[in-house]
Image (cartoon, rainbow, N blue to C red):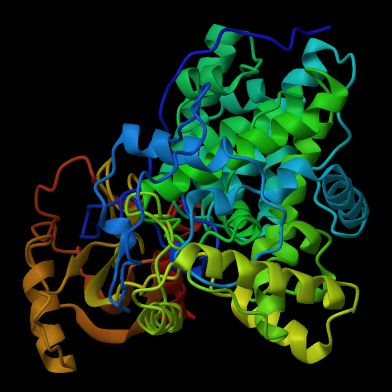
Length: 581
């Protein structure tokens, strides 16, 4: 039986840059078609150790008036600040769950009720066990007990490939790719023996092609240095396997080896933001990311306690949270079908709004109020209005009186099943979590794609992109990005195509015109590729390709069909082929 323990070593996952240029960045031609609900895995987290209880204010002050433009996440990030926030949330006495929708509030408001709700934890696991029998995925398999080393190696390899493929890619798309991959390379040893070109070609269409190269490099390293078995700890995976970060490492460690490790993707961040009532920026505020990772870490360890150090619970729990986020707790959630509404703060807040339960503005000392949540306009206006009305009064007693009255009212209606109208209000409120930042405007660019066909043998000139940057190492027809200020026309593009091609071949007399335009959407760019065809009559041997270097070569139609090209360039090739049919 293979050992499930190894040394713990720290490392960090590389992230795809968000830059674009002719040969810069590390995005891909499929990124724009991926689900926006799955961002790259966060690469930092904090944990608390024996912190003091939440401090109390020494004296009382007036409630600070907040305006709709208040941005609480502007506080400079530091590890010490993040640790302090974690302490203030997770070391205070747990609240009783009667959440009412008003900010500002203390950080302890975000302590997840799920931590102290075994029945709700069991409800989520029961829901997932049923869900995974109806939403089938080939990489979901029973937890291995007493496995052989070969079985453990193959299982870890299967989960690793599935998790990398699932980054920024829809499940339905990944299933076909994963099955094809496993048919060609059923073991990590098979993958290690493949060439990089074969691996990248198999990856075509999934995007972020650097992932394929890192998988290949990782497989060769694991086979050469670790006898084909991936490390079983998060630290070991991040340290020794290229391209594996905290999320992927947590998934492998929990699902395959039964370690109580969190796995936090975009779906889980959304679920936990709502469970904790945390209206923070999960993409841009590292403090929010730290708190969510800490919550996930504490939850998986609580859930795993029943099984001891190893078992299926950690993997099932992590997958259950991800499944909940991808099917029920989506950007527009189905709160009426959710198995964990009992512990959900966003649900409780929405229900309170639907039933008219109000809470007075608490008297919170500056420096103790939550700095993770950002006020939305209606919250800020309500808080400001109530603070003005009660200016000069002692707030504390009034707050607790209001809380007690509203809590009693809540008890009276808690047993009543929410109506469809109330559910709609709850859903509308839950959609505000996590905080939504305005999306960056997608740039629009144009490119010339020059297909140069040699008359003598029908081969085409192709070029290989640099090893780093956008679509790194893939082959393409020679291309040129038009200037950003360019307002192109058919006539101007013809002139620019002729000028560009003249630097590749000695004669452009065989220009055949613009075949059409292929639009392609990246995650950060809308690109229009204008395809121009040239015929090079090389019967006159003086008309040869100019010296271009090793990144250019002539290729037959069959070679182009099997070559590693981005999906957008493949569409250009379909347009070019049509001219010969």
